[in-house]
Length: 82
Image (cartoon, rainbow, N blue to C red):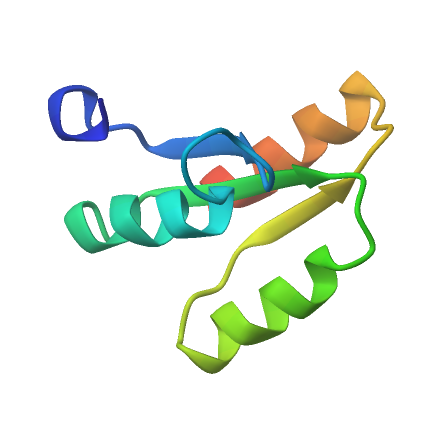
């Protein structure tokens, strides 16, 4: 879908069917390097995934569940202004 729609921002959970959200984000960023990524997660292990991604030069934002809509909006605004 990213190939067809060219999103500026990808919002995804870390746990998704078929692959991890991290894997999906990395694939999207390979195609669209300027695409920002915002993750949702309710799992403590997500911090380790983010550290692994950073070690591979991938920088992503994370919101811990449960998240209030105002937090989502604020993170989206910051991501898009970077």
